[in-house]
Image (cartoon, rainbow, N blue to C red; front, side, top):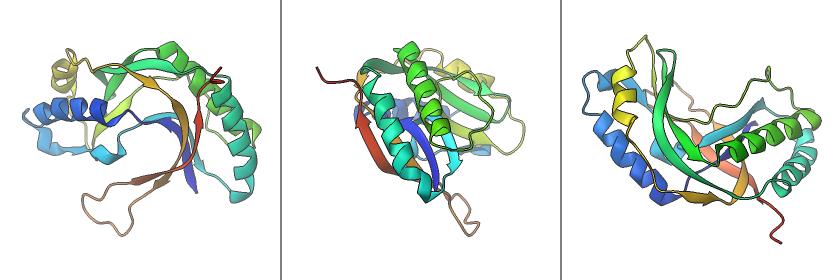
Length: 189
């Protein structure tokens, strides 16, 4: 199955983001972007790709230990950015260092469980809100997002999420994400 470790902001934070994204839809050229589905908004911490079922018990155990060693932290959706001219995202503020550490631990847990991870890169906290098929000037969208400040929340858990890609070439079809594992952060002591 296709898996990643991630975080999902709470409903009220996603609602705030939804209002900001609605404003982006009014900008010229917004119909040329493929907007990600709101039920699928998440932060990917460690993308694992296809994972063999035989690895899952060890992966679950190791992700549980990674979560246990990571204390809960405060986060908020903040500003925006882009990767090249193809992906538009909203960033995070607050406990970004703690988030980065959790991403490192999730990546290490997957590697130790035998998941063939892609080349290691420094973690960049981002929640993708749109993609472009062709080069698009995303600067006006980033400018519009520059003043976006979501309300803070406490990140309570690490999630293992299954990504179900759409099949059949249906125009506008979006991936579906299912939580297949969750572990509370910290010891609770």
